[in-house]
Image (cartoon, rainbow, N blue to C red; front, side, top):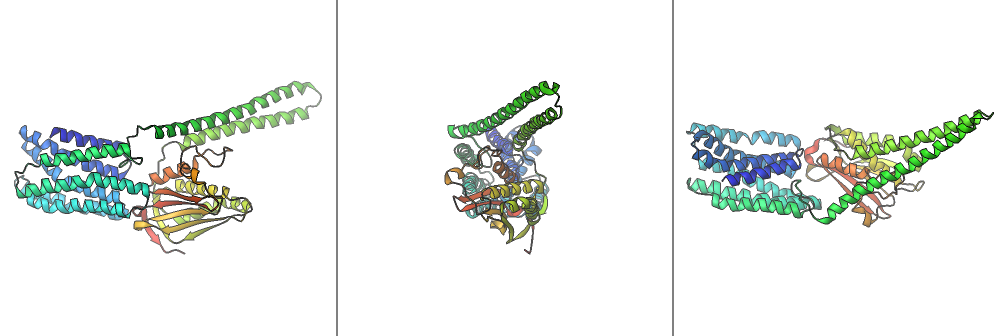
Length: 454
């Protein structure tokens, strides 16, 4: 039983370490930790700690199904933030009621009323996992949800059958030999799928194969080469300008003081520009590769979109681009307005640069309802599009389809990171010669209200 405790506790630690900022991982950690407590009950009884054994068993039997159900509610993304908050408190009430009853009944677990409480929680948890998988449209996330379903649902049903139903029929029923196999299955499946899957399971990835490592090294090498190349070029300019200043100063003894002074000023300006460019590049690469911290507040997406369009209107006018906002929905969502405005700005600049100047380009920012109460804000253009061979790589750090002239290949990577941190996702659809659409998806639990479109 101590091995049972240690194995589940280790799984809980891995879950919280993998993505501590993600709510679903925090609840998964709580659920698995509560399940691990059952491995300490026999030890407490053997030591004669009757009260401790009762409290451990009570927590194991009541908090585990509660934690499992709340995890599934959060993970499924089927409920809005307010509904989830209410459910967390409402679903805790039966736990408190059972604790009071069992204390009143002589500090003893009564398995028949426990079964009445546990069965709906475990069955609802499994149903939510199935519903989350069935309604998911994103292929990568659908695979992840299927793996989570295969790992968690069998163990929940086994716990219900062998622990709760078994003990309700026979309080002396020895369930451990039955449940241990399912716990072992879940742990083994979790490790195996985290190892084999590119997307991981609940953020846990174990990747040792060659290709992803080479891809990461390539990205880092690409960024380092870009930085070195730029620094080399700018230092070359500085060196040349310094030589020119030196030659000009040597000529300063001649009776033409005005000409050397202007020449010196010009060369100094070149040095200043080169230094500023190097500083800007290093700062941008450093800043956009750091962890993004969001300060989320309720904001209307339309307001953020309008501010972005106004800010970029001079660029649109210069290129002869018509930009418009299409409101099929007018939602208010929990987001970081500063980061989201920067994301939209990146997408608008990309869209404008994909349209040949003077070609009568069109950019639309479309706000629309999405699955399960979520919303999307998409930037669509009629530009040159992205070749299929490049589409799978556009989110990689330092990869760019625009050449290296002042572009560092960090814009879409940054956009992707912001949406991941926001609990949403980013999707790119493009075809060469037909334009590009980049959709930002906010799940229903991020939507705080929905206004009537103008």
